[in-house]
Amino acid sequence: MVQPAITVGSVPPLSPALKSVIQLDITAVDPSQLGEHAGDQDSRSARKGFNFWMVFVAICVSLFLSALELTAVSTALPTIIHDLNGKEDFVWIASAYGLASTALLPASGGLAEIFGRRTAMLIALGLFSLGSALCGAARNMGWLIAARTVQGAGGGGILSLSSIILSDLVTLKERGLYNGMIGMTWSCAASIGPLVGGALAQGGNWRWLFYLNLPVAGLASVLVLMCLKLRTPPGTLHEKLGRMDWIGNAIIMSSSSACVIALTWGGVKYPWTSPHILVPLILGLLGMCFFVFYEAQFAKEPLLPISLLSNRTSVSG
Image (cartoon, helix red, strand yellow):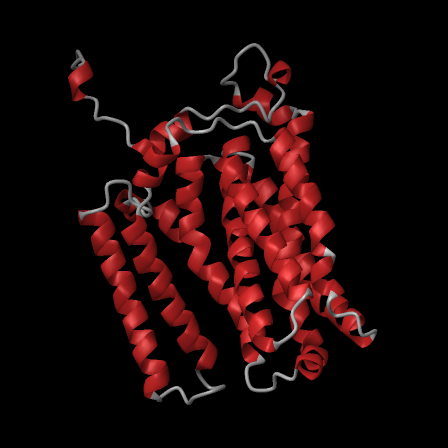
């Protein structure tokens, strides 16, 4: 039976997100080691170049710091509260980091698509380093909470961008292996975080819990700058800013922040049945529903392509 021919006009146009994936330059993998065919998945998975491993080290180091800061503060809290005299707002020292990290996760993906992986990762590392420096220099509780918010914004970007960059550099068959290595790095950092925080706090050096991030994050930034060779999307800064889904970002950031605030206060500052908990929680959930509607109907370059919701692999994570 003769199959009908596919005409050029019958092929749907590529979405901007798909174009950016197709146009990726994989020079972080040594081209000389790809074998006779550049598309040979087995050849690319067999050998990796120097640049790839340096980028992978930078990803692991960055994730290690992000996870460490998420858990290390818990055991250092008593010393920090005593030094900064902040008994009332101590819960926000840990919560501000998680809140900012959660809120910035979607935005970091959009930045990577429009400005490129390297630029977005450098911005995330820069925010994390700036927040760490401000945390170490904090003179009062308000200062520390604000600095932790900046640090968490960078940490959330690192978490999201690490997965995006890794997906660009390895084949689909390899992702399970490398994601497992990244997960192990995160788990190790989260496990030793309380020990590190407690040890530094016991010696009266809790500020070094933040200052020690600076040289390590600096090294990761240099590796990303020098070795990550993925192609930067074309266009001027004005054009790139115009492509950002600002409304979608604002909706999802405010909605997720409201939910995190409710979950942070619930059972600690207010009972779960209190309006202080129910109002932000309900508004946050409604906001997330509206975000999906807005992305499906109005967004030109949506943060969440609605077609992903019909993909079982994407929905299951």
